[in-house]
Length: 193
Length: 193
Picture 1 (cartoon, rainbow over the protein chains, first blue to last red):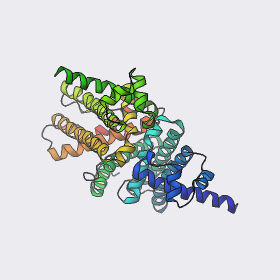
Picture 2: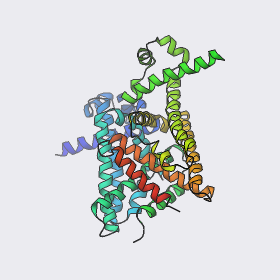
Picture 3: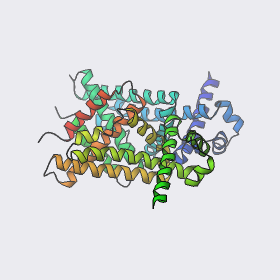
Picture 4: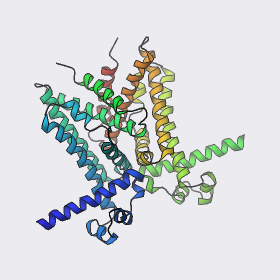
């Protein structure tokens, strides 16, 4: 088992280097050789962990998705009804989260044309909707699941909409503006009982 | 002048072929040679219109942005206060609009890492916010510009959020579901006076 854990960890480390390259220069900036170079290893080692660039990219995409899942889970573990905190944990308001979104958007072209990437995209979205649905039901006990789900979809729609604009126009979409827009929409979707 | 008009038209036709390729297979699917092949012409002719792949892609991105601008303008020319129609004109609820969004998303990776693409993205977003701001003020006379702008931002945020989910998960986001979510959010952002 230690060998396998180690193998998983190393894959993840390689994918994190790939993620940095993607966030800086898009998918074209990533080759097995580039990743080996920034990771300070050889192409042969990278090829040991990933059969080809496509497998490396797919795993990199999954890692970026996991990082967002980790953030929202941490907020809701601490306070299961903290809808606002959960939403804000996803917004591109610091360097790490900005990098996550740049990576995420870099893959959208692939997700729009390749089924295996579309599946990762869909899984992440569904996880977020399920998670936010639970948070909404904690925040507003008695809300029916279908209605909570509709609210959760609305919240995620707003998160994606803000993130997509803020990533490309950070001057217009400062963290303050992002939080303000998010708070306004939360107020509309989830009015005080 | 006729020569110039012709030149512009031909550039646009070539870009439309490139757009089809992008929507089917992402940016990697596009080479000057591929575009020449689907356009039934030679690489030399394509090179006459576009210096390189980057220039071709930048123009293709602009054409996709123009097509969305044309749709929203047509709705508001007919009825300047038709906020709901304007928003729906942007949603991926038919093949043409689905293709536009797939193209749009295909370019997000580039827009996140290259300034000239980020600029096209920003221009489109600002045009949409300005256009929706005017529509909101017609629909709700007396609304202050700053407030109308905030509502317009909210509406566009919802459009982008719905489109991004619907493009990758069309089974969950049918046209009916898209319209319903849009209508709910319009009702929240722009309550009946």
